[in-house]
Every structure is written in C-alpha cells, then in structure tokens.
Length: 107
Image 1 (cartoon, rainbow, N blue to C red):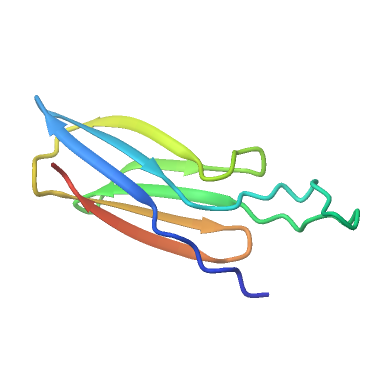
Image 2 (image 1 turned 30 degrees about the horizontal axis):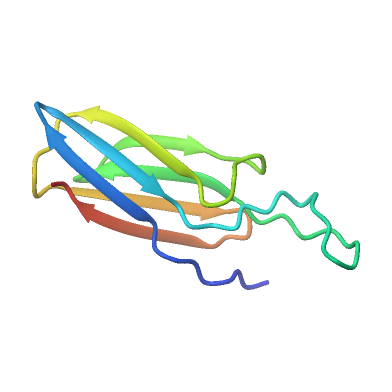
C-alpha cells in the first residue's frame, strides 16, 4: 500500500547564548486506526512511529511516537550548542513505511 505524499515538516531553529531552540511541526494525518468513516468502517492506522532531529549530523532528539499523538504533531525543545548557519535536519518514518527528511538553517 502506498502512503500519500506529505507536506514538508515546518522547522525553525534559533541559536542564542550557546543554546539552540527548535520548533517543528511534522505534517502527518496521524490516524489511530480506531476512528470510523462515514460508512462506519474503521479508518486504517497511519501514524509516525519515529522522529529524529540532528544538528550537523549529531542526534539531538530521538522520539518514539504512537497512535495517540495528535495530527500534525508540534514539538519545541532546546539543545546546547549550535550557531547561525548550522543545519538542523528532521527525519520521520511512519507505520506504513513512508518517510521524510527536511532541513533548516539555524538562524
């Protein structure tokens, strides 16, 4: 089964005083597999299972998601280090095998 195309992950990263703050929104339907459609049939489960954020290739966030996470999940976190011009990369994979990688430049 082919998963539908997804929109880019929204990523914003700002470095200040030795700390980089990251805000991101992964654009995904996050279906639990428990909701019924208008015909009363279950909508198949389709949700992000893992999300990894790297800074210049170093993992700064490694998250495991499940079906209880809301549609288009939003995360905000900070890590030590980082400077303007560095790269922050967000990679996720879902339960149907689809994946996406998006990058942002630290401001």
